[in-house]
Image 1 (cartoon, rainbow, N blue to C red):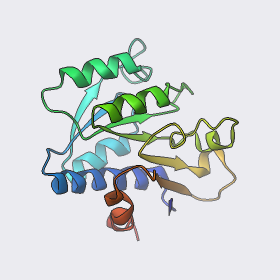
Image 2: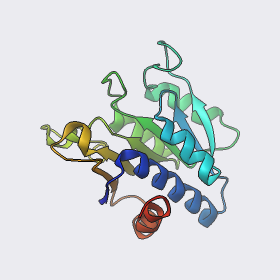
Image 3: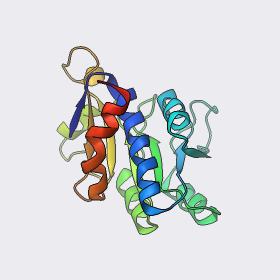
Image 4: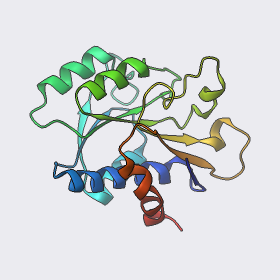
Amino acid sequence: TLYSTEGSSLVIRAMLALLKAYAAECHRPARILAARGAHRALLYGAALVDLEIDWLEGEGGSELLSPCPGADQIASTLDRAEEKPLALYLTAPDYLGNLPDLREIAALCHSRGVLLFVDNARGAYLSFLSPSRHPLALGADLCADSAHKTLPVLTGGAYLHISQKAPSFFAERAPEALSLFAS
């Protein structure tokens, strides 16, 4: 876990910079599959590091607040993809508090060689539930938590969590990625 004083926006930009660098390391196209309704830091970050976004439409709802797609829809999208993304990016919980089945989605992603990145800005408290509903506990590879939204933290305190199961590349390069966008 690394700390941010610039909220999850900094963490999201760092996660995308890490993915871009990882793509170069793996000699793969820099692509991410993302659900609609993501924070605009995803858009800005992808533009800054030149990362392609393939959009995953939710089922129902408005375009901006469509619910997080389920595992079946994600599987179908990944199976039809001409070019497999390096990672799936989800906002969970979403802006309305909905939580997808991250354990199922993580297993699905990993079975297809796709990483799972989660913007958990509104769910830092999820690790304190019993059992934990935190994205890392459910199989996410990288996760952004905004402590200042749901925990007693002043200013823009946030965390970049990297799973021990994620490629070591991410933990090794994370400090550099965070310092790319902030001091």
